Image 1 (cartoon, helix red, strand yellow):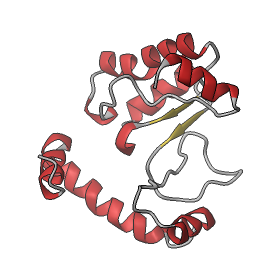
Image 2 (cartoon, helix red, strand yellow):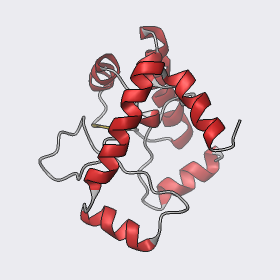
Image 3 (cartoon, rainbow, N blue to C red):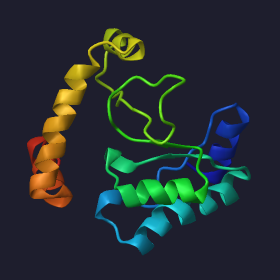
Image 4 (cartoon, helix red, strand yellow):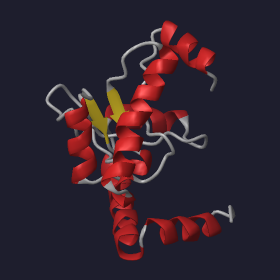
Length: 152
């Protein structure tokens, strides 16, 4: 999106949040790289949209305690992970759940997600993928996944 498109989206009432500078997996980064992805990206986005950015969503749901602490220290109001769980008024603002809605997601599936139904199935799949990434690393995992999806 262009800067003008982002500003227009914001003018329609959409919340513009930060998703990093380069979409790098936060759990792979050095402290300086985390600063670039979490703090510098926010500053650049605020310059573009001409308003405060308060929310951060980590790329691929991959983050570390160091990334979370930096986001809190930077003054973000919330931090979204990719853990599939329902959010409610008592949910930790720095542990917000998020569920991917893809092109192939049907309306019926979307309605179930909105009601918080069957999230355990999504969490189970996420748990398997997280374990695989921990064992083989983010980069190798992504190459295998791309090959399986025919994207290599």
